[in-house]
Image: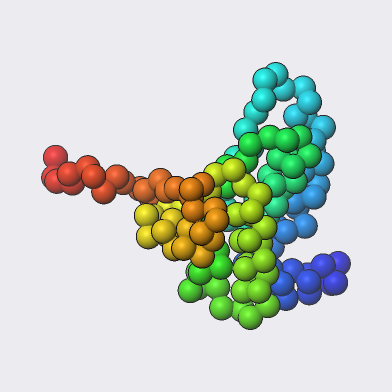
Length: 140
């Protein structure tokens, strides 16, 4: 309805799927008990709501959680909406506090996140986005 659209546009202007997180977590909660072993929850964004669903599932079942940001959240210069930036900062803290490991897409983004959250620095890493800088790039 209109209240949901207004709430999303005000606080989550960069994620129109935020209301998807609770039903997704509920669906996963019905499915996870049928799994053998102890699975790991992996979430990637965008959309940011995937981290919310994953965090809820990891907490409910005591599972390890890997949150793959791909792009910076609170330090993303493209995210300019004032209330959206406040929500981004809150959600970044929420995710960093709860996730067991956090992936970024560049070493600079990983370093910046670890600098903003020094207590969590040991659980921040990166996977190069598209190529490994250690590989020698040349024509075939």
